[in-house]
Image 1 (cartoon, rainbow, N blue to C red):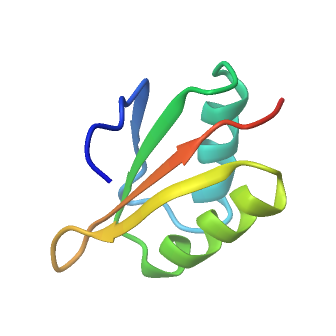
Image 2: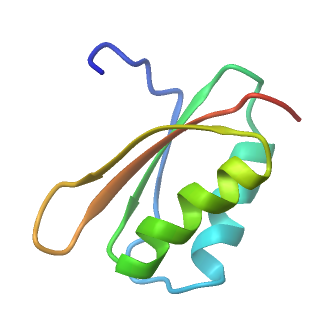
Amino acid sequence: MEGVKIDRKINIKGLVCPYTFVKSKLAVEAMEVGEVLEILLDYEEASRSIPKSMEDHGQKVLKVEKVSDTDWIIQVRKEKD
């Protein structure tokens, strides 16, 4: 889906669970409903666990994309506080 406006980006490369989710959750909490967070990470397990956790917390996962041999991008839209 092209044309998504990214309101905030975080780079959590080098971190592993649970720190990957904690950082992502804190970033979402600091945003307004409707804003989009882009997360850059290099921990494969987090590329699966972050989207699941975000959806469990009522947020909308827009994209999970492997962008290189080591890196993923996840885009999350804040749906609720």
